[in-house]
Image 1 (cartoon, helix red, strand yellow):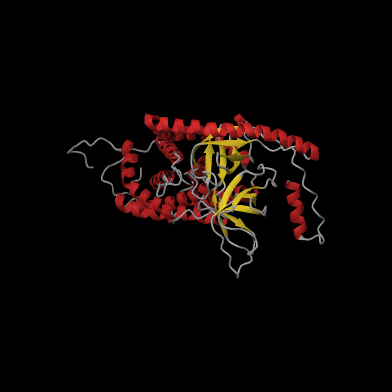
Image 2 (image 1 turned 45 degrees about the vertical axis):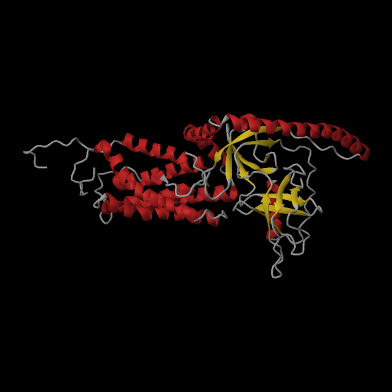
Length: 305
Length: 173
């Protein structure tokens, strides 16, 4: 094929180099539109219907391995676990009873103060099936999807705190992006002093409080909870604990790595929280002073929302 | 059948249904959720490279693109990431096939190793440019494992094309 062209009576289609250029450009265009513009979710859903049976069949061995360990768990271990769970339930029951009373009291007080009622979100229990194979991101697949009423954007928690957010929904599965993913951010506040900040995943199983001034009042061991400003996460869910604080005079911001509070890298059951309703609308964006590039970008963003 | 390789055996012509069957089996194996285990070989790339080298007139860039997209969907990667890498891999495999087929399976594996490695490098570069985290050097070990698997694969995938060995003193070959 190299060096001499085939006789014209053999039909071979376009030249290899032409094919390479064509398919290369198409796949690069797909990449850009998927990573930057997110236009292709419908296309992906369509193709995923094709891939789904194969995917399901491939997940079966993993499922089997996961279930087999449960299956062969010893009786003693299960009894111990059962006892522990009973104790925990008793403790929880006492708290629940108090919670009910507190909630009523809260409602009364809020009515007195004429504050808006906090909404109670409906939620779905799901199980983590497996870690997505893509080594560049931290995502897991849940065993419930659009048919169970899960939507993209919902928050996911376990018994200790926030795990992440649903990013893609398929009919029977949902893709959950963990908090430790590089692209994941969550608005939080420090419990001790109510300092607001944004927590980013840093990729290596940790998270990072970014854009806090070098002299910000944060100490190692501080608990960080959701602030609820995003309209996605309910306020007050535990997210992380500050691991250490590195203040460098040369840098404007402090470097604050945090450890996730929930079992972000574990398997098991999780709770997909319902969408929050009745979040106050965002205040209108101020008119830009100069109608330059920045103004355009902001407008485009506003239009998207 | 390539008449120009140094194999002593004359092979039967390849059956296209077998080629596609092996490609889909490789796709299936790629879908097995191994999580972030290091050094898992990309079997799809390996089988695709095999057929691209073996049958450059039948399997090529188009197949690479389609199967790349299917891998992207299944493993939750960016759409087009594997497709792009496999398109390059298929092109290189087709172009190299005339040369590679003259070597023994072990030497062929040495030729395929850089192809597999480069397809991984392409994916890493593409994703790092998009702002993903670096998955660690262990990931590249997968292409070395893949190249090792070429040697058994070479026999397994050619098995349906082997004829029974029959001795015939009067036949010239």
